[in-house]
Length: 85
Image 1 (cartoon, rainbow, N blue to C red):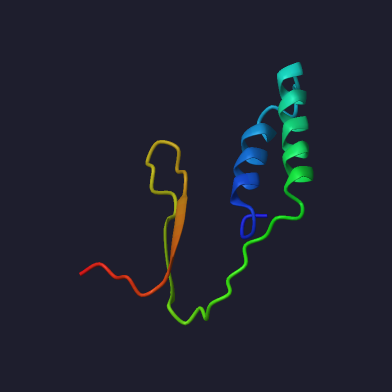
Image 2 (cartoon, rainbow, N blue to C red):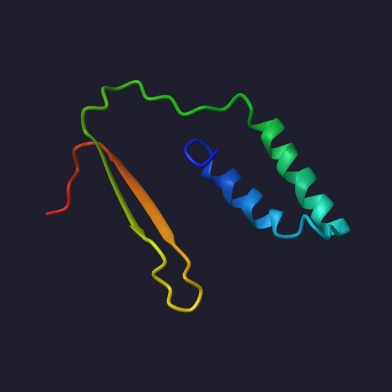
């Protein structure tokens, strides 16, 4: 889920906080997620070019927030030859 559909990962993570005590708004949100999945089941990213110029970067901070000890992570990919000088 995290590698292929980060949009779904965020939505499911956000809504799962309320799973123990669901409200009508929670049920509506879950139905919307399922509808999104149903409507996008046939969508895919397709690259027709050679990906030799694919460059990826990632960074993480494990427990960097001193108050919550939360970890953060991020990534970015560049496809193409444009570079920043």
